[in-house]
Length: 131
Image (cartoon, rainbow, N blue to C red; front, side, top):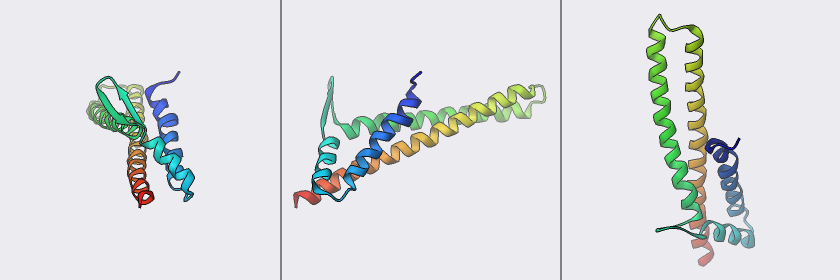
C-alpha cells in the first residue's frame, strides 16, 4: 500500500537526490538537463509554480504536520507514563507511535532540506551558465 509517507520516502526524496546529482555533475549538458527539469513550469488550476516548488511546498507542510503530531503523541505518552493505571502494553503502543512520528519527522526534514538544496543549486547553476 502506497501511503503519503512511502511516496515521500522513496519517490520525492529519490527524485530530489537524482536532480541534485544532475546539478552537481560538473558536465554542462547534464547540468542543463537538471536546470530545465527543476525550472519546468507546472500549472494546477490557478497555481503556477515550478517542479521544485511543487515538491518543496508539500514536503515542508508535511514536516510541520508531522512535528505537531509527534508533539501531541509525546505529551499523551508522558501523561500516560505518569499514570499508574495505564497497562504496560498500552504504554509500549503509545511509545511506538511516538517513535513512528519521530522517524517520519526526520524523513520529511531530509526531504525538505534536499529540495531546498535542489532549488538553490538550480538557480546558482542557471546563473553561472548564463554568464
